[in-house]
Image (cartoon, rainbow, N blue to C red; front, side, top):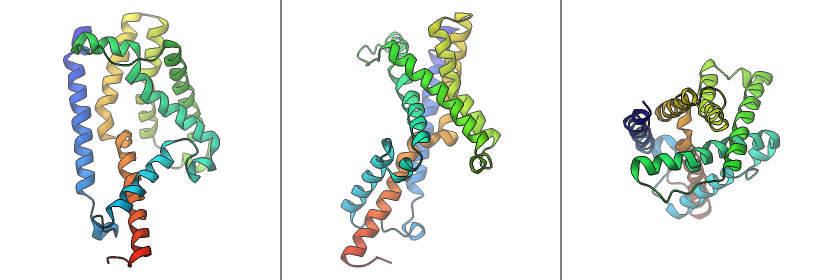
Length: 226
């Protein structure tokens, strides 16, 4: 069972994950239309690239944008959640062991277990905060559906079960299998749900930044192309 879910099933999960994300990225780029978006994308590429990078970087770091600074507590929780969600799966010692066992990768960097535990707890606590916020704030509650709660549960389950495995609480083998299967299920769902924003964020923020950069360049130099 272990060999199957960390071998063929893991491969299948990665194929769907990367293939699905590639399809979403290509679809997004092919869907750009300067006539609809009112942006001449081929004009002023330097200003467009600069605007795209600025937009991404301002939103990629805590309090880097006016939007983040307007909600300091939520911003902190948001970044604790997302840093943990990204760093722990990529650099956990246990995952590096699987990479070495299955694919002979021995150079993969890892983080100390105390840091992994801290980030995992941060993800779990942040999830609780996000749920309370969705329930407690009317302007957020009205936009929240069962689908959103499902995605939160799908995201946090590998971290809860992984923490249980590391702390050896309960039946180790059972929770290990649940942890691996839930993580693979998450990988499969990411490209086809709102969780696609793991790459969609960079595309949308880059497009918005390029939009403003190009339009500012046109306004400053010789007017718009339309």
